[in-house]
Image (cartoon, rainbow, N blue to C red; front, side, top):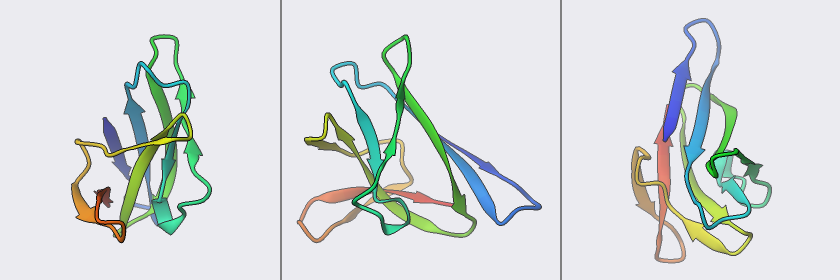
Length: 96
């Protein structure tokens, strides 16, 4: 799940990621603001799901993917869409 909170008086929106990858030990979100090197590490919850949040600029568009256990790349079917990347696969999309 991706939850967006848009603030009327601020120049950014809060985006919360909540995902359930029961087989994963670690989950990161990469690609936000064009950064494919340093991801947002999601925190594992007691129920096995992962969550984390970030502030992103309003009226922006971001490609992203989840990286599980530092090896497996996964898209989010609940994103705002998908776009083809330079590798011929797709990235998830979030629009604010």
